[in-house]
Amino acid sequence: MTSGGDISGNLIAPEAPLLQAIERMDAVRRKLLVIVDPDRRLLGTVSDGDIRRGLMRRLTMEAPVSSVMNTAPVALRLDGSEQEALVRLAERGVSLAPVLDRNDRVVGLYPDAVSAGAHRDNLVVIMAGGRGVRLAPLTQTCPKPMLKVAGRPLLETIIERLQTQGFHRFRLAVNYLAEVIEDHFGDGSNMGVEIRYLREDHPRGTAGALSLVTDPITAPMLVMNGDVLTRMAFGDMVDFHVENRAVASLCVREHTFQAPHGVAEVDGVRMTALREKPTFRWLANAGVYCLDGSVLSRVPAEGPFDMPELLASLAADGEMVGAYPIHEYWLDIGRPPDFESAQSDFNAVFSPA
Image 1 (cartoon, rainbow, N blue to C red):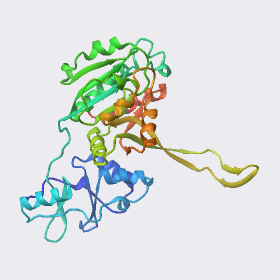
Image 2 (cartoon, rainbow, N blue to C red):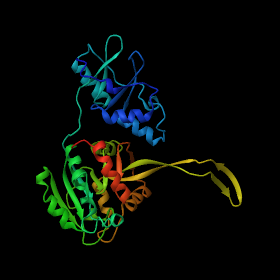
Image 3 (cartoon, one colour):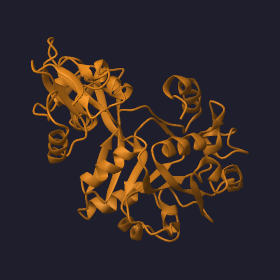
Image 4 (cartoon, rainbow, N blue to C red):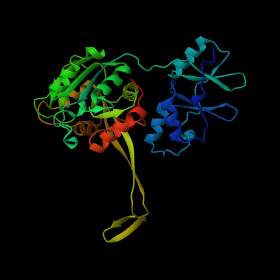
């Protein structure tokens, strides 16, 4: 067994803050961080899933990365056999593992490969029919998903990023200025994907267009809003959905707000507590979902129907609705300030797809 290439970017100290771990995870090709002591001896590992579970525990960005690490990871020996490595990885259901030398120092990762870009047949439904009223007058003659960010339509960037991650089957829900979208993308062959259209005869809300899906759904499908710009790995969300046996999953993103004043808590006319400029944290719906085909029967054939209604009905019936936290760049382009942010952020955040 060989040690592989340079892994310096994958090594991190246990006291490093979670924010640094997230930045490192976004930057490295092999999505596993290895926690080491000053002598480069193995203390644990951190996967992307470990970080997301830490975020769901509401850990702060200042928390040490050791608070989310796996303290008993699979570790392979440099002098071990390839067959032994494959068996141990399969037994634990992992795809990457640190490689140790005879002095227990981390010298590499096995295998030197990544799964990004794997072919995925999951259907992708993108909601692109809204009027974008808050972005007027920009949307008077152009549907919001077709507004140009960094010189190209936002929807084109969304589809291309999904295509580079292995997705190739798209259904675009269209209504307002639908011809602009259809004329630009056609059947998707120019982008190397398959595009068909869900034509809404009236506004159907953020989930209503799912009633127009006629494809047989044999694998979980992705559903997302057509105004979301993100660096998230969509395939990882699908894998999360399957692993947790969810019927529906939604992406959530933590937001924080520090009150500019002290906040009083009262019971009637009695003050019970006074907090000085507290910070409030909440998980916002990020507008990206993964759904099993079975949930389509809950979508009415007529009238507006929104995704929160669908997810709430599933949860109320005791169905598993997963919450998938994202730490990657994410922006909902719903207002003029958001559109300006997208223009200024794009080149710094996104490399060409």
